[in-house]
Structures are given as structure tokens and as C-alpha cells.
Image 1 (cartoon, rainbow, N blue to C red):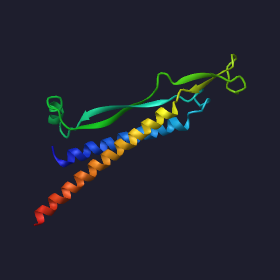
Image 2 (image 1 turned 90 degrees about the vertical axis):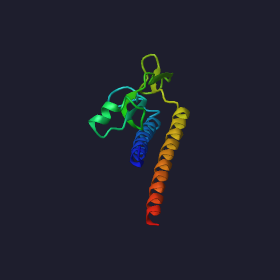
Image 3 (image 1 turned 45 degrees about the vertical axis):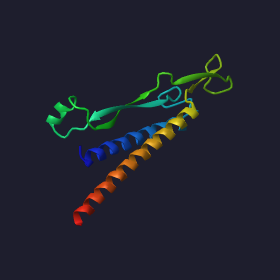
Length: 146
């Protein structure tokens, strides 16, 4: 494993957490939306991640399962949460059904904020790892000058 493997792993983590923060921001922004262009309330979204082995050649691909190595984080999909709506009784709301219930997005703002804090901390951790790798590379080059 070289420094570039660590950098690729950290950069993939940055991209994954940035996608996660964007999805969370969208969920928070649409927490009260009862009518979308597709029809019905906004549906909460979630990001699905997968750890992928770093491969630079076909031989690496064949050996990827044989050894536990550095992985990249990839966003596999952005899915709609299975429990994405909740009903509230509000007969005066323009989107109320005949029984007086309105379908709202099932978004818990506190849960989304906790996920946002966790994603931002993971983003910061990846930046710290990138900076540490960069500092090691600079120090290695400085040793060669002496």
C-alpha cells in the first residue's frame, strides 16, 4: 500500500459524505412538502454506500477478494425510504383527503440533523487523513534534500 492508495480512499470518502450531506439537506428542506411534481408528498431519501476494492489492473481485480486491502467508498444508490410518509389530521389543509388526513413526509428533523453532524465529522476526518498523508509526503521529500 502506498500513499496514493490512502489518498484515493480518503477522496472517495469525501465524495460519499458530500453526497450524503446533499441528500440530508434535501430531506430537511422538504420536510413539510405535501405536494410534489410527481404527486403526493416528498419522499425521504437515503444514500446506500458500498466498500469497493481499489483496482488499477485486471490482476488487481482478480486478487481483490483474496486479500483485505484498502477500499474506496462508493455511492451505490440513492433510495426512497420505505416509511416515507405519515398521516396527520388537518381537515382545513388544501391537500387533505376526504377523511381530513394530510400525507406528510416522514422526516424526523432531529434524526436528520444527527446524521448531518455525523456526515460532516466523517468528511472532516477524511480531510485530516488527506492532510496527514500530504504532510508525510512533504517530510519524505525534505529528508531526500538533506
